[in-house]
Length: 106
Figure 1 (cartoon, rainbow, N blue to C red):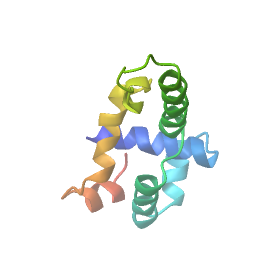
Figure 2 (figure 1 turned 60 degrees about the horizontal axis):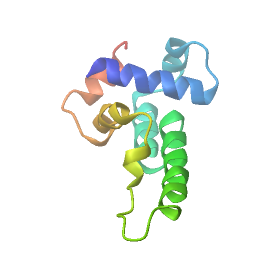
Figure 3 (figure 1 turned 45 degrees about the horizontal axis):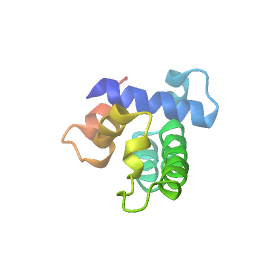
């Protein structure tokens, strides 16, 4: 679980323009980090959001050129980061140790 949170922290640092994720984490509170997770749940950003946008475009193209009678392809068939979707799912779940983890070093 902790390496997935670290990965999110790295993505957040990249999004905010920090080269040093530990520096970023030392400058924000556990509450702020939790708010970033909540924001990400509502409005994803970064490579996963870009992947979803690209997958949507691919699905539109493929489905507009399919043969008559063929079933339309779903967007998830065109995602590059299939495993990342599962990896990001922890962001949508509440964990008992959230507060303890957020206040400790990552």
